[in-house]
Length: 192
Image (cartoon, rainbow, N blue to C red; front, side, top):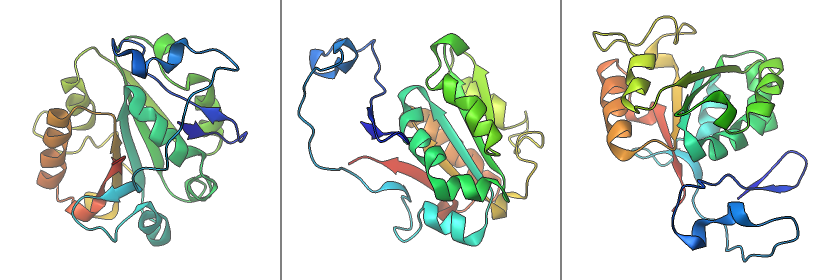
């Protein structure tokens, strides 16, 4: 559940779930449901609890967001946040969004042009296989793709990840580590 820039509540749901408790997509305007207290801390380093997205902004680092499916919901909150939009006017902010089926099925596609006008690079890539994310971000030798990460070296950037399966996230973390990214440069969506 997200609060959008228009102060309206928004949801991003996976309608393929068979669990009726997760089928908010079937509700229409005026439907009611209970909302619990806030969970999690947003995006933070798993390895250094003092590191957050604020660190990225304060240090003027390039920011790369990697997401898939409903993981775009938390990333959208970041992209809609005024401090990140201000950061994008002077620093690189890039969203890599994995769309499994088609751009027609992509979440928040109507917002992409506005994000681009705010200086945010939106890079969607289509592929059924999650392993394609690795191929989109790294070259065959496992090095960061120069065409994708051209706004500074690995030691200067922060990466936010959301919505990726655990095994894919683990592979990406290893590849980023092989490219000299430290644990405090990788931020994950904490929704505990």
